[in-house]
Structures are given as structure tokens and as C-alpha cells.
Amino acid sequence: MHRGILTEMLKKKIFPFSEKWVVILIGCSAVVISLLFLVNLGRWAPSAASGTGEPEKSSDSGFLSTPRFAYLITGTKGDGQRVMRLLRAVYHPRNLYLLHLDREAPASERLDLVRVVKSEGVFRKADNVRVVGKPNRITYMGPTMIACTLHAVAILMRQKRDWDWFINLSASDYPLMSQDDLLHVFSYLPRDLNFIEHTSNIGWKEHQRARPIIVDPGLYHLNKSDIFWATQRRIMPSSFKLFMGSAWVVLSRSFMEFCIWGWDNLPRTLLMYYTNFLSSPEGYFHTVICNSKYQNTTLNSDLHYILWHNPPRQHPISLSLKHYEGMVESGAPFARKFLKNDPVIDKIDEELLGRARGRFTPGGWCTGRSVLGSNRCSVLVNQDLIRPGSGSKRLEKLLLKLLSPENFRPQQCK
Image (cartoon, rainbow, N blue to C red; front, top):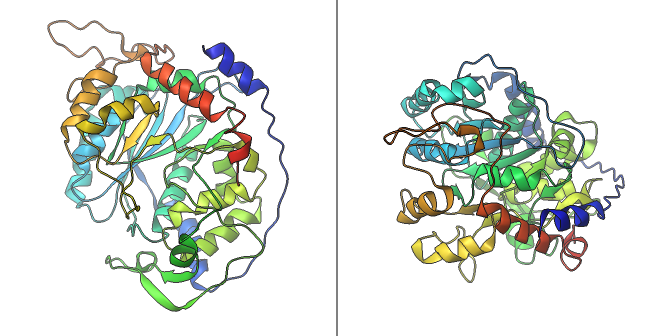
């Protein structure tokens, strides 16, 4: 298989675009998140590892140019070490990384994260890891997570280096393959492809998510508190169609620019709508993309291996050693949700990533010599050298399934 077949399948896919303009008016509290977003673009001053290397611009040729990913890795109080472990597992000098510990985490934990970033020679040389210095208050059932994500994307867009896809991960996520595997396979994909699990068949969520009106105190107060529920309920919108799905996404730079730069009213309109929406991270990007010209660029997958209870609960099943084979067979590049330091993460490090504790996942970029147990990834050799392994074969198999005639078009924004 595989790259030849995959490339031919992708070349036959045509992404027709159609414009849809939407204008709605909702309550004054919705305006706050837009103002908060604009104001905070200036105050999110990331702490950076110093460096002087000029990044190479990505090619615009489409196929067969190695892409770059822009990662947002988020955590809360007590997640500093988990965030750093995840960073080392998904690190590649081609990519950009923004680390965010929310305001629940003490300043000392955030400073520890900054010190580790600054002390790592590879980070300094590549100059591609940032730590958010002034974090937001996050209420995970409210819209503050959307504000956090949009702020992060704006920061990543201000960096020198071009990137092709945005990926959000939390401290409870972990990769199931190397970045070399991911970069290799994605080099064969059109740069406007978006991976987002979505459906308009929202079922019970209509009455428990869409119709209730909530107010998130995290938009207004420094102290964390639960969301407020309004007594009124709203009707379903008629000027756009609601979509919902997973909060974990792999979104193209083109689509993220559409959401950030604001040459169309739709992203701003829906941002205001979702200000009072329960669990808005599970609906905002989904509704924007499926009501815009990007609706035919979607693959209905979040590229995560996730297991849910039946019936589903608020949080997915915590993955353990008994789920290992299922993770591998899924072909997904990421999985969640993991408990802190669960033994299955050590097994993933050893068998899938080839990663020693406290070190980077090996890749073509770190082909230095390993002498007497020394770390061959302590020196950045060649960031353009990609050496994919077995993970790339698993991912290719998953993509061929997602791009098959029975899955690709029939599952786009339906």
C-alpha cells in the first residue's frame, strides 16, 4: 500500500466550496467573550526558550512536502509533569508547541515548566516551545475553553514559523505513534483537510446542551465557580444548523485563519451564540465548519482512541493495559483518557515510541550516537530527516478507511 494508493485516492477528492452567510443577534453577555478574545490577544505574553534559528517555510506545493503541526497542550493544577512528559513524547523540531496550565495551577508550577523548557538545549536550538505566562480561568463545561483555544491559535499564528495543522491535546492524552510517522503520512494529504468528529443528529443533547442557557463566571471573575443556569430555555436556531462531536481536533491553518481573522461574520456570530452554550468545545468548531465553505474538507474523526461507558457519562473510560491492543489496532495517532503514570503509558513508550523515561521520542532529527546510555536526541541533527516506522502503516490504514466511498462523502456535515 500504500502511499501510492493513498495519494491517488486523495487526488480524486475534490473539495467544492459554497458560501453561507449567517447573522444573528443574542443577549449582551455573548458580546463579552468576543471582547475578551480581542483584549486578551495582547495580554497573552508567552514565556519562551531563547533561540536564533530562522525557521524554514512550508512548501505550498500540496503533496509530498513535510508539514508542520502547531500543538496546544493544556493542563491544570498538578499537571506540570504530565504536560512535560506529553511534550517530550510528541516533540519534533519542525513543529510548534504552546503549553498552557490554567489559573488553577499555582504560579510555581508554571515557573517550573518554564525552567524545564529553558534548560533543554534542543528547545533552545529549535526555538519552538512556548509557555503561556498569563493563563485564563477555565470552566470546562463553559465557553472559556473555546476562548483559550482561540487565544492559543492567535499566539501560534504570530510565531515566525508557518504551520499546516492545529492539534489540541490535554495532559490526559498520549500519542500512539511517533511524530515522524504522523509527519510522513500527513505529507500526502491536502493541507485544507480537517479532522473533526461531528454530527447534526444530536439527540438528547438538544434538550440538555442546546436549549439550556448558561452563564460562565470564568468570563467575568477571577475566582473559579460553577456555571449558572438561566431559568429560560431557547429555541433551536433556524439560520444555521447545529453540529456536535468531540472536543479534540486536527484543524487546518486555513480554517483556523477563517475563525481568527474574521473576514466572515459566521465565526464571530457563532462565538457569541456559544457563549451561553453548555460544553461549547463540543460544538463551536463543528458548527462553524459545517455551516461554512469548509464543510466539504472534513474527515469525520478526531484521530483519537477513546472508549465510552454505555450509556455515555461525562468522562470517557480511563485507559489501561487491558485496552492496549485495541489502541494499537485502531490506527489512531492519539488516545485518551489516561490516569497519571498509568503503567500502560510506560508500555506505549517502550513498544510504540521507543522512548526512554525523561527523553524524547526518537526520530530522524536526532540521529546522534548513543554511547554508554547517553541520549542521542540531546542534539538536533537534521529536522528535515523523517524516518517513519510501523505507526505510519497503521495510520495509513485508518485514513484509507476514512477516505473510502462509504465513509468520506456520506459522513461530511450530515
